[in-house]
Amino acid sequence: MNAYKQLTLAQLKLFARNRQMLFWSVAFPIFLMVMMGSFLGQGNSLSLQGMIVDEDGSAASAEVQSRLLQSGVLTLTEADTSTAAMERLRAGDTSFVILLPAGLGEAIDAAIPGQAASVRLYTDETQLTVSELARTTVTYVIDEVSKARTGYMPLLTVESEGVQALDLGYIDFLVPGIVAMMIMTTNLNGVAGQISSWRERGILRRMQSTPLHASSFIAAQITARLLLNGLQAVIVLLIAQLIFGTQVNGSWLLLLAFVVAGTLAFMSIGFIIAGVAKSPESAGPISGFVSFPLLFLGGVFFPIQNMPKFLQPVVELLPIAHLSTALRQIMNVGAGLTEVWYEAALLGGWLVVAFIAASLTFKWE
Image (cartoon, helix red, strand yellow):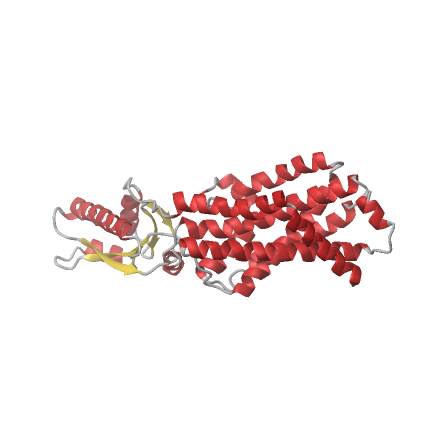
């Protein structure tokens, strides 16, 4: 226990004295967050992206849906149920929902004068400009359908209803990604570089010749990096709250639990790279080869949903993708463990597999 405490304190002192490491692991992510948040976080992109649900399933409703999909202005995604679409709207994942209710086709075919069938439009009222443009566009398309069938008799109308959604900006998307990026780079790159350097300088060999147990050495490394990552995450989140007004809507305890899980998973991957690399000079490029693509494929700076479909199966397996997703769900939506259990399970799976592989590849000399 005494050796474990001394090694942990020694590792923390190494962190504190290494100014370059502190800059790249703490100051640089904060600088990146402030710069990107200042330039992009306050801007509101104008995009008429919504969802459409056909609950009627008739030929007439299919015609209405086809005209809306072909409008050239609206970017619509078909949803299976209105419940799923409304959940996406309330979560801020879409700007509006068009609902073609059951009985719409029968009402259209009946064409009773003075009794127009209703197409329901639900909008996110926190995006007033988008809501008004969507309302105008949908009304125009519906009017065209009416005119095509009955001349100028109002066969269809649009019932619009505002729905309060989460008022989130790019900065709310960016901050959890920055935290995930710090966890990955500090542990994956940091562990690989440090362990391979110690091996080349003979430090690990000298440790092996002492009564020190490997478990004490690894436990001290884990503890020191957990403390560092926890401090990093808290600093970044507090600065983001002070400058940009971001909030942690969920549990801080659950948030820190994912920081711990991410730290352990990426530390294990770092130990694998350190075991495979023959020198510190080769450890750096290998770490970069692994971590650099993860920054762009893991949803750190850009939404995973916007990536090409052929990459989606690969992205779904990346640990940083699920770490950044879990952090966003907890911070922005206030999700609990029941909502992010899949992300927790996948990170746990990565941790177990990577730990076993690291145990097989780790070398003292």
